[in-house]
Length: 102
Image 1 (cartoon, one colour):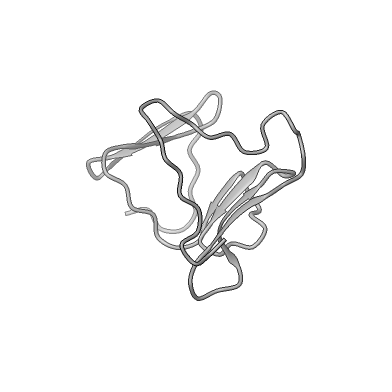
Image 2 (cartoon, rainbow, N blue to C red):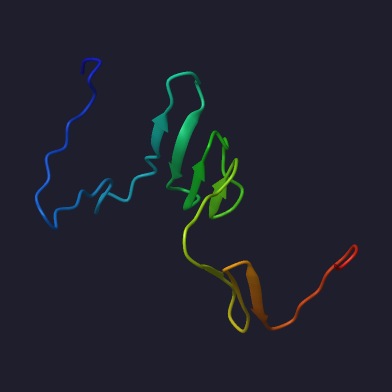
């Protein structure tokens, strides 16, 4: 492989499977141009993804750095939900806090 890397040619509704039906412990890593640490890491044995030189991601999705989004952000676990949109926070379930609430 030369400096141009891989070239994937796709048509509408195409997809690419990596490690499909092989069930191997084969991670997928993407490197930036100025680091030896993977910029994006798909850790197949732990079923975790790290973005931004996270090393081994400690959670299912670990992002090092800022996250930008447009629209609402939804999250929660069974029995609770948190929604961040239009500068407001809406929550259901148990809510706890520490520090000063303003």
